Length: 106
Image 1 (cartoon, rainbow, N blue to C red):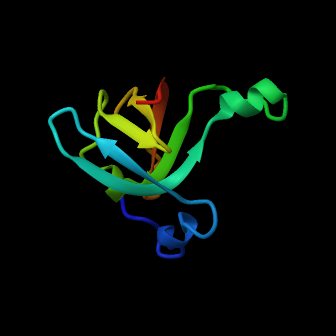
Image 2: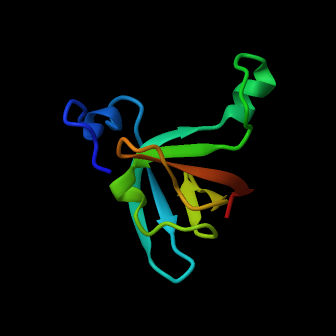
């Protein structure tokens, strides 16, 4: 489903605000740079700031940027490699969530 007319997702993921660049490495070979918002609730949960129903790190991005990403591909941000634990979760507004698990530094 495309993003609603009233929302420009490019503004939402702006690199000057909250957006960051990451790389997805595909199991079948190749890689692609994507832009989105990274969140690691396990950090905030350990600080007791937020109550969360998950402690898995995740990455929000445009649904179009998540196209072709599958469970088992790899997500790299700041030299930390993460496993993508499942196919992207689509929210119906043009946004997708990647559920991740950190492997560590290469």
